[in-house]
Amino acid sequence: MKNSRALNVLAFDTTTSWQSIAVCRGPIVATRLNCFIPSSHSTTLMINIDQLLKTSHMTIHDIDLIATSTGPGSFTGLRIGLTTAKSLAFGLGCPLVGLPSLESMAAGLLSHAAENSFIIPVIDARHSEVYFCTYKKKNGAVQQVSEITVSPIEQLVQSLPEDVVICGTGALTYRHDIEQVLSPSRIMTEETSLFPQAEIMAQLARERYNSGLFDDPVNLGPLYIRPPAVRMNQAVWTEKKE
Amino acid sequence: MNILGIDTSCDDTSVAVVKDGTSVLSLTVTSQDEFHKKFGGVVPEIASRKHLELIMLSIAETLKQAGLSLADIDGIAVTNRPGLIGSLVIGIAAAKSLSYIRNIPLTGVNHLLGHAYALALHNDLSFPHLALIVSGGHTLTAIIERNWTMKVIGSTRDDAAGECLDKVSKMLGLGYPGGKLIDERAARGNRNAFSFPRPMLKDRSPHFSFSGLKTSVRVFLEHVAAQNRDYLLDDLLASVQEAVMDVLEAKTRRTARQVGLNLVTVSGGVAANSRLRELFQERSEKKGLTVLFPPIKFCTDNAAVIAGLGFHHIKQGLSSGLDLNAEARLAIS
Image (tube, rainbow over all chains, first blue to last red; front, side, top):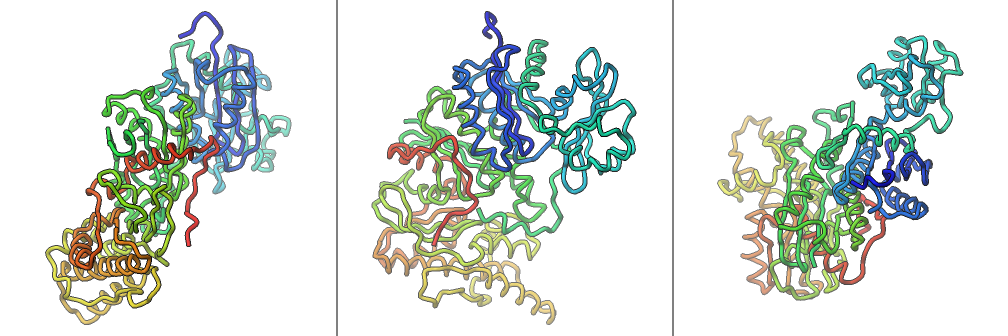
């Protein structure tokens, strides 16, 4: 590993309808992209990575560490991002850090939360359900204090702690329900609170890597949280038409 | 020129390294049948999950088996059409990343043309020739040109031939995939025991149709159940299989005559069927056609044919950009 200079990190998230990519030199964000790309991560991700590297006057071979989201989120988007990250890390022989999307979202809200207060990022999981996880701000960092869960929004609303800020697409979709129990000022739904910010991911990944925590590109897997939707005796033949 | 081929179009994760379009240095195919069979068919979400689990492992293992590293690869070929979108994008994402790192050509390959290429791995083919591509997802005849482009002549109007067999197998509670099971049991049965319709055989068009045959089997089963009649399952399977294979051979032979081609290749999963091979030998060959079948392991989905075909695409300068897209269907006829 190139120790003589700052760690160059490429981070990206494709688990929502937004695509977030950041190229960082140590703590400095060289270039970032946050754009709304519903359902076309496959055709745009590598092109955008290439463009950001060029704008940063770097090539992919200057990258020392790759960070990506392991979910939960959109299944297809998650798989595209994860496959891309695994393949890049495998091909480059560089370390890879997989981060739960909810953790990156929570870390993005640290400046909005008081020490020892709670942060709950909520992702719209469709079918009237949300993915969420409870984090606590501890020593200026996020600490996970619950399992990542998928449940109906009512379950989350009923169990909200008092001192909490909420963000994510789930907070946007179910704002009305959440406002019944929480002050609107604690519900963060501006665009940058809706999806994992790659520059935050890069920072989390760097910290993790510096503590010796990183993943194996061949074996890193996703956090789907929800099992595949399969109805028994479902006729799937039309799908098999390649 | 070493080409790394990747195919994740349906329910098999396959990776291969092929040198100069014909020499298969390594090939891995990881079947997901175990995970799909309890549902009686391919479940797209399960297929996508398995591909993600397997893709890097397959690439690493295939390179290892070839005794090569990524640095020895000169180009990457990946199936980008047709197939399950959620499955295709996984192979495509891996292919793009690896070609980007190495700065080597990437080419998107038509899975069906890949099936037809199976014959080129071991034969010195003449062009143009007629290909019958027949699997669980497709049934079509196409003229293959020297530059590896295809012009579809006939295609199925509804179910694929393999799909018809799979559905009959499911109807009888025999399991999935049905084609192989039926082939084995049919060998023990009397193929003339029952007479099932030969769909569109008398029709002069080059097209196929198999959904009616499946319905005939259902009607047959209802009929024998209502009358409390006994029948031998092997006889039934042999008779159904005969109807499918009879139509495939006869229509392909007629199409070859119509387009004036003497060389016919048969590929795709159903090309593994022993009765289909027999029929082409007994009838087509006797009538002056040359018919080639690939070895069984190159009939079903495999990345060796993708890498082989990709070699020709890359040699012709047909490389793809990083915006290479997955396409569920081919624009045909």
